[in-house]
Amino acid sequence: MAYEHIIFDEADGIATLTINRPERMNALHVGVIAEMIHAVDRIRDEGTVRVLLMTGTGRAFCSGADLAGGGAGGGGGDNKLPAGPPDAGKVLETHFNPLLERLFALPVPFITAVNGAAAGAGCSYALAGDIVIAGRSAYFLQAFVNIGLVPDVGSTWMLPRLVGKARAQAMMMLGEKIPAETALDWGMVYKVVDDAALMDEARAIATKLAKGPTRSYALIRQGIRDSLDMTLTEALMVERRNQMQAGRSPDFAEGVTAFLQKRPAVFTGK
Image (cartoon, rainbow, N blue to C red; front, side, top):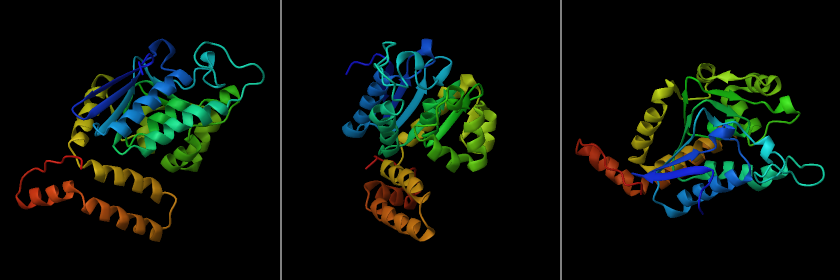
């Protein structure tokens, strides 16, 4: 697939996916999502990438669905909606939600570098990162109520788990911007840095992860998500199963050998 709406680069085990519609603040329609799904599937299937870094071009990470281009009703970016009453849920089922599920299911770490606006679906994709780095100008917005819709793309699942019911509900019902520093205080992001340093910081973390034990990272990210809906006993069982898998990996053998030899480990992601 030739990409029109995203930039996808791969180097040194790091895949960088950049939403590239700066004239629309990187708003999403089905054409954009289809390209993002294709890129994420490449990461999953080709096995050459050890970390995914996602960001946006210009002054926004992603401003959400492109309302002028059919993003909320199933159009494809041609400024036309289907005939009859629009089904604002259909495009979630066919495009937006499958992308989110793919991002969560990736076998490699996922970093988001949030520059400027992360609104609507863009907020969800930003917060889906295992590690979220925000520039100081970034903000997070659940603006669905402002147009008579409800939060979607997993936000009603993610936000209460990140910030608690009270803050999540207020954020969704008031439709107010949450600045980067507030997001840091609330536990939505890992770190806030100067805008000019955002990509350098994100790439430094990506480089560290790309040299790490990839299978362990996959088990960590899956184990954390699973445990959010489990009892302690169930979570302990998952940890035991994941530790068995990690303990059989070549990276574990290398880690122990390097520790005993008092040298840095050289992980291969196996």
